Image (tube, rainbow, N blue to C red; front, top):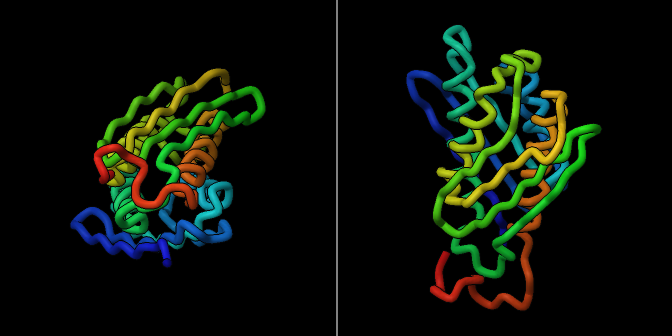
Amino acid sequence: MARNAEIIRNTKETRICLTLDLDGAGAARVHTGIGFFDHMLESFARHGFFDLKLEVEGDLEVDTHHTIEDVGIVLGTAIKEALGEKKGIVRYGTAILPMDESLILCSLDLCGRPYLAYDLSLDREFVGDLETEMIKEFFYAVSYSAAMNLHLRQMAGSNNHHIIEGAFKAFSKALDQAVSLDSRIQDVLSTKGSL
């Protein structure tokens, strides 16, 4: 059964078309108009083995906020839609990922209850053309739109580029683990019978 989704979202602030295949090979074609953000999303796809196509027209003449937040909303929605009833998935995923001097932990639960616990220490306003305060907004939007419990914690690190890239890669590895299928799980991994 195919586990993919196509989401189109148009507002007065952004126009977004995203396709996601959870069982891909890591191929990505991304254009948001924010170079470093594109690089992070390409890393997410590559390291999680997700196929991702994303085209965004955003009001970057205002700032990056609407574009980044709305991409988070659409990506989270696509993850949720691609998973369907979540039958057979492992549900939980955890990755501790090194990126040079930084070490980032990501742990998540595709439980249907949204929550973000975020602990990254970023002390620069920008990395490239990406406002660092938008990293939290992006992961908040993803977690709530996907209805996942998402924890991101910086265990070490001082370089903002490395911390951010480590967070995106750790998220992709944890998500890849959580969406993987286990033949021992006949329905959903919950005593409630639903996720």
